[in-house]
Image (cartoon, rainbow, N blue to C red; front, side, top):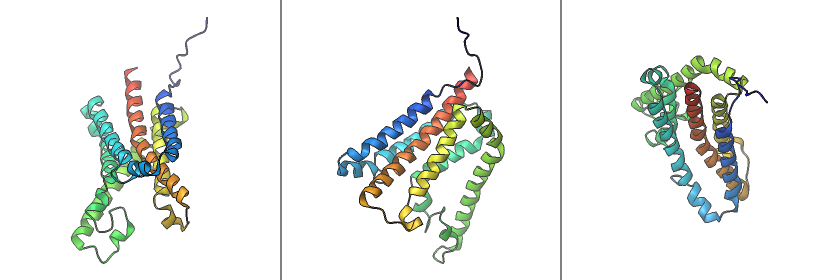
Length: 216
């Protein structure tokens, strides 16, 4: 009779695998859909962008419904990061600023007034404080979790990859001086929009996996 594996490092990757398969299937299916339908799905304010925003809101709901107030306050930077991602997806970083709070020219352009510049600097400092807090306070558990193949940390790692990939693809022609064909632009837009939708999915998996571990 075989022994039951009680190794605490034994992980269930079902949520992470299902999410990856789900995202890949969408990316593989979209190119075969009618081009007009694709545009409706992928445009600003379309289905995928809306689902991305709802995904971030769902992550906040998960945090506030499953974490203790002590944990929410002590790890405030997670909730703050998700709110920043939500506002970024809704283009608040551009809507109320001349060039965009995340654009370097916002801080050097003559078109930006002193009052707007000070607000931009304040927002940027707050974002940097969030990132610095996460790196300084979570890096050890993150790298240990990656080493131990824990689903929560692997999901966070997957979200980082998606952030990098989607950021590179966004405006790739302008950034890298390349000329994409129409089909290339289509594929790039699919990867970008579906990849952005995958970020809150990975966040949610990390939150759920962490909660499951606490309860087990």
